[in-house]
Image 1 (cartoon, rainbow, N blue to C red):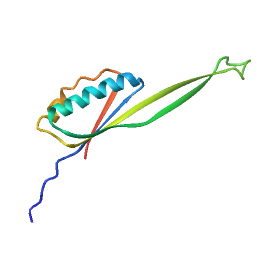
Image 2: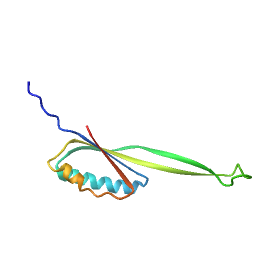
Image 3: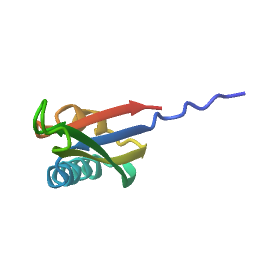
Image 4: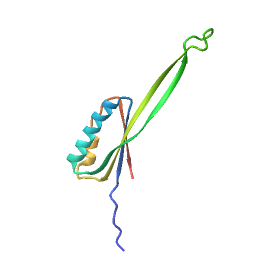
Length: 107
């Protein structure tokens, strides 16, 4: 029996607090993946995560007076089903803005 080696698939997850910066980075990554000849699925928008912080305005007397702040995290997912000949080289030389987190997993 001959065993066929399965080509590894990549899962790229991008996260950011700013949706415009995330979309700009996403188009850059998608363009590089398309240029490398990779077969991709996505981008898949993931549900946004909302974190609410409640802070007292005064620390002693006015306990009922409070402020609420929120932080929203946006995320997108790209699955690279079949990598092209230069996919890994393009991903290593990728420049992403500071506010975007890129997580790449190999399956």
